[in-house]
Image (cartoon, rainbow, N blue to C red):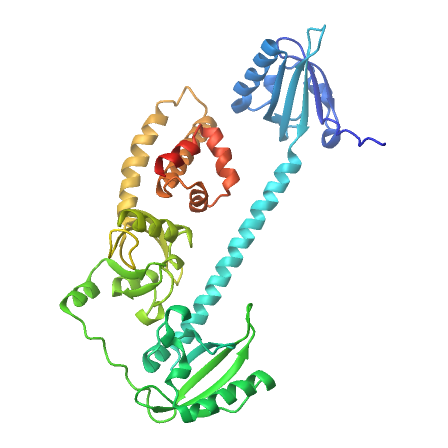
Length: 455
């Protein structure tokens, strides 16, 4: 049996007990470097200042235990180039010297760079898709015709622009929750066969002449034409209706009670959602926050569509309302359809103490308040603590410590916000669950205890 070749080290250093390099061998990716330049220099002089403390710790471990586990250092090569190297250091039996064996992490760094570039490309693709979707919705909503997307299997309404919703008496909720979304129920019986025949011909031949139908309680005549569109799950019909006689009939305005009128005029955004998070009612302030022109355009859409982490924030919000009956000062970001991004606070209450069927959601823009608080708190208290270390610690070390304090703070905040659920906390932070576990170990956070405290 042929044994696989062992990976050769990239750096081998022979050190005396004071950490001075007595011999050096470079191989692999560093073969072109002049190793003799290091001989006679203290090992600590060949690494950046920020890694000097870790290097002294390694030498102390070797002297005390005879070996040091794998540690990552930034090694300054004879040419001056700095690379990440993983070292293990051993004490040679029967000799006074130490041996440090290092493996380059340059390949890992390149993979990480490619991963970051891929993530950035995916983010750009997502933004482009979001922009295309926004343009599509604006074009459809601004159309003077009634436009609908019908499921090619059962002819249920999948999408409808505001004119179609108002004129045909449809709703924008999910088909299973809204039986009234079936357009066929609004057709006259004598027009039903004609309309279905047109759709059948479009499916079989790719096109068909338009047809005249009467829809709605007023039985106004409409000229309908359809086309078949490919979709990921199954084909859908794009159906356009143009009024055959005169302008589109006006939809009667909603009769508002004094309470409805006050909610509509409220400067704070207010919406009513069902137990799954679909929007049932929204005032003008909410429409302004999400940058939508009409209430009918957002009815039935999930509230999480506009929140900071689609799916995660809404899941946390609904879970807390179901369990506690109300949520106060839930902080997140809200993204508008035209690209705006604002910090908001959400308060929510259900129509029942537990497991409510309807939830009222009040959303407040706190961008201005946060900017003031961040200048007063973050720039004041936290920087005051770090400022006291100036002169005793290098600038790079100060920056690293500040980064660690901020990162730990936001991990704890995400865990509290997620009720101890580490999967949801990782989604809120935009990192993987495995990365969150690594940070638990780095900052001494006990995720199990925090999760148990919230359960």
